[in-house]
Image 1 (cartoon, rainbow, N blue to C red):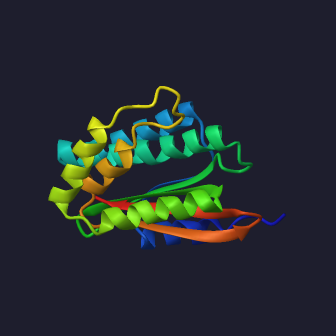
Image 2: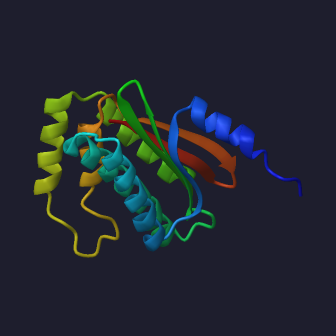
Length: 178
């Protein structure tokens, strides 16, 4: 096994203004530790408290969704996440990805595309409608508010990709700009 080109990786991080990058199995404690590092970085950058909270909230939502999906789907490799936080042109981008079942990925991409067509007023209405929906006590997922909330906080429509990787699985990624 050859040694990785760390300088080349560093150069790529600088070119793409990547502040934080993680690739590997995600756990609750790891989400918390990386989140603390992100909070400290945002504080040092003197980002407005509201913007810092939005960036942090997007990171938490994305990573917790991956962890929850990995637990409920029991799909091998679904707990291995790639998470990137970058900064450019006065905005932050939070992106995360993991392996999903192909059908689940298509459904998620369709939802995100629907949100991308909504303006802020429509997203607020969708959020309120979802908030009022009765929760199924036996449901294994949350109320579904997190994705809508991220769409509301994003300064541009969320972007998602789905790459078929065979055997009924795909690599799903979601990116939010704040």
